[in-house]
Amino acid sequence: MGIKEWVVPQDKVFFDLFDRLTREVVSAADLLVEFVENFENVKEQCHRMKQIEHRGDEITHEIYEQLNRTFITPLEPEEISRLASALDDILDYIDGTAQQMYSYGITETDDSMIELAKLIQLSVVEIEKAVNGIRSIKNPGLIEERCIEVNRLENVADNVLGHAIMDLFKTQDAVTIIKLKDIYQNLEMATDKCEDVANVLSDIAIRHS
Image 1: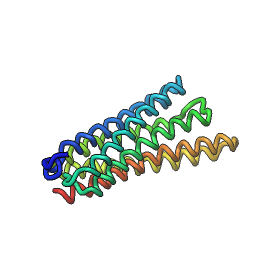
Image 2: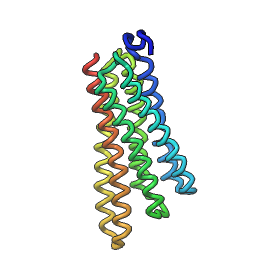
Image 3: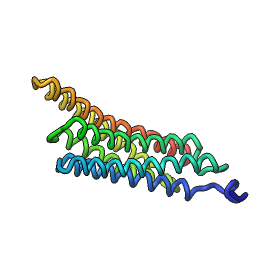
Image 4: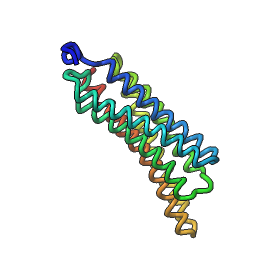
């Protein structure tokens, strides 16, 4: 690495990597909605999801590698690390839940799964816009608005989860209760991870505005 790479902030590199990682998160959320709405070719769909998750892992690794060899960064190193990790967590939960549905032998999805998947999808769209906004942070208020919306969507997901579990315990099949409860909770956990990303982005917007 030349002296220029050590002295000049590598703004474009990190922001480009975050844009790429966020696109994979959006792709995973889009596929999740397609997956639960049209629960067909489950094994093939899970394979597609795993490929997205692997690409996300590779980008996350690239961010850490870049962080380790860059002397001056456009954001605090801790901010870069937290954001990369939080985005990767969303991918892990989306992929993990899809694989869980396959391994549990789920034969059909329900309205609660679909609603939670759509809330994840809405959340990551807001996250993508906020991530694009930290490249220059010309208007931190717009980033904050996206983050507030993600927080609102997470609250909605909490309510969906509560009602889903309440309805679930009205049934008598213990095995089904265990399986579906796990799936509902992991889908809701993905919205929690979206909220984690929103909190990191909000902190970045405030600190660098």
